[in-house]
Amino acid sequence: MTLTEQLLARGAGRAEAHAGEIVEVNVDRAMIHDNNAGLVIDHFHHIVQPSVWDPDKVVFFIDHHSPSTSVKAVKHHDSMRKFAREWGVKRFYDCGCGISHTVMLEEGIAAKGLIVVGTDSHTTGEGALGAFATGIGATEMASVLVTGKLWFRVPETVKVVVNGTLGFGVDARDVMNVILSKFGPDGANYCAVEFHGPVCRSFTLEERAMCCVLAMEMGAKNALFADEDTPDEGYKAVVTVDASAIGPNIAVPPLPTNARPVEEVAPQNIAVQQAAIVSCSGALLKDLEIASRILKGRKVHEGVRLLVSPASREIWNKALHLGYIASLHDAGAVICAPTCGACGGHDMGILAPGETCISCSPRNMSGRMGAGGTVYLGSSASVAAAAVAGKIVDPREYLKGRE
Amino acid sequence: MKGTAWKFGSNLATDEILPFQYMVLTDPAELGKHVLENVRPGFAAQPKPGDVIIAGDNMGYGSSREHAPLALKGAGVGAVIARSFARIFYRNCINLGIPVIVCTQASDECAEGDSLSVDLERGVIADETTGKQYSFEPFPEFIQKYISKGGLIELLNEQRKKH
Image (cartoon, rainbow over the protein chains, first blue to last red):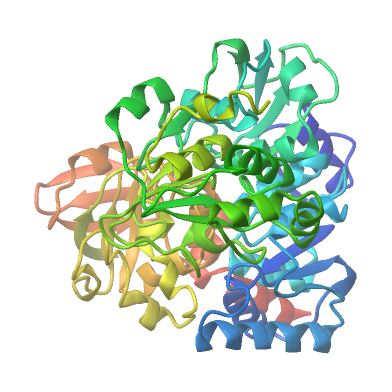
């Protein structure tokens, strides 16, 4: 069995589970955030005699409109807080705690072996410690809240093997951008993704979280890192990537799977009005470290707004004590609260029509950060370098002497 | 089920179906007023109840927001036909009782404005404008129940009332 088949078999209380079978699993963690909680709570109240099956397995996050961004948003927050009090949900991560996917890993809530569902497509990120983790809709979540169960079709698994070594100025994000582009926006649709090979095994938890989050952008149902090599049998496909051949790259709009080498993008002199070091895939501690290394003693280019929104309170705190926040602030960055924020245009960082942003967040589809705005995606180094240059550039030029 | 076809392309993202600023809404009719507004301004007011969206590959790509299919439902859309669907969008539609039909030929050949009739049990799309018929794999029985009852909550409630 693949890793995902093993996890779903365990979740279903069976000895085995195989791709194509429909299994009903017991949910171990049900994560609900404020962008979808309104619908979930509405649906919950439409269920006959509703009651929460196990409040200890429910996790609430206020991370999309955090702190509240409108009267309507704060009313949803209010109903979440009341719901949590009424049903005894103690895991309640209020404004400022950070992004669900990041915090669920930091706190070990999405531990190895668990079945994790969340009302967010990037719940695939919670697979980084070895859970089966996937995104679901509001109706299903309401049903999970009452029954504690959910059906899944056991997915086929694609195996991604990354060999070689990362060159100077090349980030795990650059590798993941290339993987996404090999598959395309639906190349792993309905599939589990397993990351293998020496490069993936060397990835830190933060880098693994970024890869698992972004696996969603090629359609993955869930994503996992393998501890050991496996034979190639039993997979739907095996895709091998040579990291040594990868340089910094940029996913050009309107798809996150459109990676182009920076050597091809930089000569186009693409000016940016906003640079965003934000999100569960791009504002982890290592991203703030890289950005501060590039920005220390430099200034954000005139006409550019650099947004920095550390992914969690813990990351914010560490970045403060390590001096990253001071370097970024002194360079002219706007330091924001830990929130999903600019990534989905939910609160700060909305683009005007005709504006261009470079971001290390997961998505660049049309209108993602504001109708008529354009989004390019790259590593935190690419974003920080663009903030200094005022346009998309090769980040290696800005990392020289700052290794 | 009968309705007029409205055609869209591939990789239509849920961000495009229902833009972020309306995610604070929960009422289907209110959501429906903003459906696809940046992709095709003015579209929201046009569908008649039972009309059909025809999309290309990977329909409903991206965000898990159930607001997107709910907005389509609120605008009167009765079914979605595509070459393929993104998985969360597909499940969300079924859970809301919206038929989602995978049919490459109909996606390619049916034109905007064609009158379509869809027979979910037999798995047939009839394009009454061109006279062509297209077949698709009907839903397995356990999924068909979601569609015929109007969604997951209705099905769940029927089971809970029995006990």
